[in-house]
Structure formats: structure tokens, C-alpha cells
Length: 296
Image 1 (cartoon, rainbow, N blue to C red):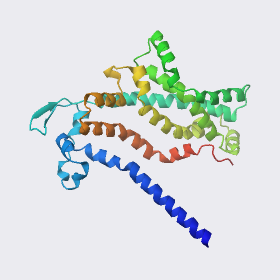
Image 2 (cartoon, rainbow, N blue to C red; image 1 turned 135 degrees about the vertical axis):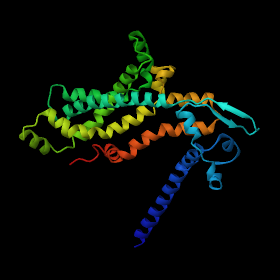
Image 3 (cartoon, one colour; image 1 turned 90 degrees about the horizontal axis):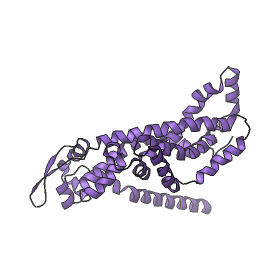
Image 4 (cartoon, rainbow, N blue to C red; image 1 turned 180 degrees about the vertical axis):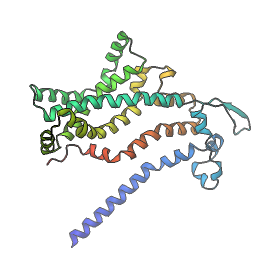
């Protein structure tokens, strides 16, 4: 009885500590969210929690200024009227989609084929090539940036989307193959045998049964590519016409370092799509985290 009471007490303490940790971790998020809807003069004068007393001050002008690129006139704390030029992040948002979607689809297709072959098809050198793929997991993208940049410059690939697609595909493949192999290998062999008996080919089984399992890695790859800044800076450069959201937000830190109302709005613009993807496909995300951890 005493052991059970101690266990209950310990569990309660752990849960309380985890709850407090989660609250401390997420508390800045509502503050940033509220700040993204407040005028600049209010942000500089009062804290975000004062919105409880005056909710009518919330406005969408910050988001209009960033997404539409329109000029806005605001009044400073000194009473001066200042006209600001909008940043127009709509183009950068489309650029991020242009970079992210192919950088997710291409490695998934290649990795899914490779993982299926390693898991269910016997061929010469199968173990050797799989060990080679696992060994490539330790290769860091950062140590290859300069050699890749030199090769891209020789091939005249630097500064366009093909360069960043190839970079994300090449360095995302080892983890994708390893993750999908662990996941695909857990599929009962009886299911594949039944499909073969029904006349299905390897390609049919792959498309109808294996490919949908790749959704777990798609979430990982989407989040990594969407939030990437380093690879975009190196391979896309400073060209405004191909800049992605993370680059434009990074530029805003230098040019609008004091405009917290715009920086917070820009931050939430970059977060909207990843949040939708994560919450919409959360069950695949959890399945991906547990891929290969349980056998049988």
C-alpha cells in the first residue's frame, strides 16, 4: 500500500513538473501572437497582456502590410506621421512552396523505392549497400556546403531552385531510406504474399501499400525544408525573385529590427502552413517517430 502511494505521489509530481514546463515553454507564443495584431505605437508603449483591457486595438494592418506590400501611414510616439513601405511576403511564400514541395516529393519517391527493395527484394550486395546508406547518415550537410557550391558554380546551377532541390534530396535520402526501411519491414510478409497470389506485381504493391506509408517522412522533410535558412542562403543567394520566407524574415531582422509588430506577424506567416501540415497529419508523425521500434 505504501509503495502504491509513493508511486501515485511520484507520478503526480512528475505530471505537475511537465505541465509547468509546457506552460513556461508555450507562454511566449500567445504573447507573440497578440503582438502580431497590435499597432506599432501600442507595442512600444504597453505589454501584450494589456489587450485584455482594450481588445479593440487589434488590427490586421500588420499582415496586410506584409502580404500585400501596401504603404501604411502610422503615428509614432512623438506624434509624427510616418509612411512605411510594405514587405510583400506573398512572393516569398510562393517561393517557399516552390522549394518545399519538390524537395519533399523527389526524395520520398526515390527513398520509398530503395527502402522497398532493401526490405523485400533479394539482390547481390543488398547488405553492403544498406550499410553504406546508414553510414551516410553521419555526413553533415554543413561540411559539404562549400564543395557543393563550387560544383554548382561550375555547372551554373547556383541561384536557382534546381540547386536547392538537389541539395535537400541528396542529404535527405539516407535518413529517408533508413526510416522507411524500418517502417516497411514491419509490414507482415503474409500481406505481400497474399497480394502476389492475387496477381499483384511489385510495382502495384509499392503504389497501393508502401507509398502511403511514406507520409510520416513527408512531414519530417516538409518541416526541415520549410524552416531551412542556411541552405537557401548558400544556394539561392540574395536574389529577391527566388528568396524564400526564412530569407525574407532574416532580412527583416536587419532592416526592421525595432518593428516588433511586423517581425511577429512575419514569424506567424511562416508558421501557418507547417502548423496545418503537422496537426493535419499528426497521426502519421507519431507513426514515423515509432517506425521500427516495435517488431512483431
